[in-house]
Image 1 (cartoon, rainbow, N blue to C red):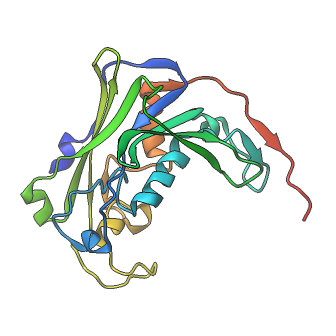
Image 2: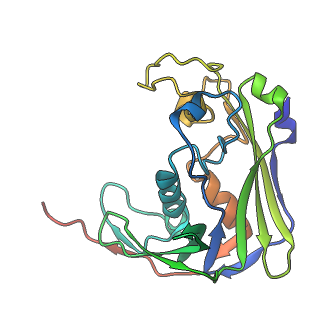
Length: 233
C-alpha cells in the first residue's frame, strides 16, 4: 500500500559537480536498534543501519571517485567510475562542528581515503534523509525513508526520493539460510532476502541505487579513469 507513494521526483539538475556534502550518520546506533520495531533509522537508504564508523565508510565508498583501478576479473565500466572527486560529511571534531573532507588516495585495488576536518564546506549541494514511517508502518515491519538534495546557495529543493523497505520475516530473530543472525532491519530491503515474486523494497534496489539517485540530479564532473594492469603474484 505504501509503495504507491514511493519514487523519485527531480525538480532541478546540475552539471560538472566536484563535491557534495552528506548528512552525518548517527553515532548512537546499537545492535538492539536493529531488533526494535520502532527504530527510526534509514533502513532503505543505509545512512545509519550499521555503526557510525562503517556507515561513514560506506557513504564515502559509494560516492567518492576511485581514480586508480587495478584490472582484475572485473574491468570497471564508466558507470562504476562516474562518481565525485570530493565528499564531505557533516560532523564534530573535539566538540566543534564542521565537515570531514575526503579525497581518494587509492593505489591499486584497495580504496583508501585522505580525511581532513574543516569548519567550512566547499560543497554547494547537500544530501540528507529523514524517517517518514508511521506507527502503522512499523506495526508491519515497514520502514520509510526520504532522501532530499538541496542547493545550499539558492535554498532550492532539487530532488527527493521516497522509498520503503519491509522485513518479510516480520521481526523474526531466527537465523536464516544466509547465516543472518536475525537482525530484521539489516534484512529488510536487502537484495538477497527477497522472496520472488515479492520484493522487499520499493523502488526496487539496484546495485548502485543510492549513487544512481544522486548523480541523476548532480552530474559528476568528467574525470580520467586510470586502469593499471593486474600485478603478477
